Every structure is written in structure tokens, then in C-alpha cells.
Amino acid sequence: MIAVKAYATAQAQAASLASAAAQMGGAAQAPDPHAFSEILKNAMNDTVQSSKAAETAMINQVQGKADLVDTVTAITSAQSNLDTVMAIRDQVINAYNDVLKTPI
Image (cartoon, rainbow, N blue to C red; front, side, top):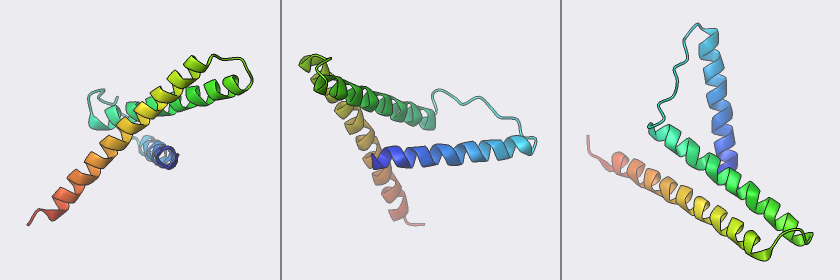
């Protein structure tokens, strides 16, 4: 959940910067759907949505309203999405560290 909180903070900062740019008269451009930031944003949104779906499935299972197979499927999907986002994060950190090690 730390990654989700960090993402929420980044979204709030981005919204703040966008509103500041709009107030300064800067025209906001539509984001490129193939940009890395958009791909990462979509992956985070998918992860958050699947986590919420898994939580809902668990609550329904505890209340006896959901099938065990559906609950396990939702949890597995959420875990898979989180693993993907964490792998992306690790690769970005490794790339950043490689850039830092580059001699100037």
C-alpha cells in the first residue's frame, strides 16, 4: 500500500502543477497514450482497481456472498498486477542507478 500512497501523492502534485500551469495561461496538452508515464499511470490504476476488487471479494467471501474460487481469482489477479508494478519500479531504480554510475 506504500506504492499506492506514493502514487496518490504524485497524482496530487501533478494536478497541482497542471492547475498552476493553467492559471498561468499555459495550454494543457493531451497526454500521449504511448508515453512511459501514461503506461505507468495505467498500470498503477489497474493495480489499484484490482486490489479494490480483491478486497471486495474477500469481504463478500467472509459474509458468505461470494464463491471461494472467485475470491482466490481476484486475489491472484491483484497480486499479479502488484508484482508487475513492483518489477517495473525495480527496473526504473536499476536504470536510474546505472545512469548515476555513468562517468561524466
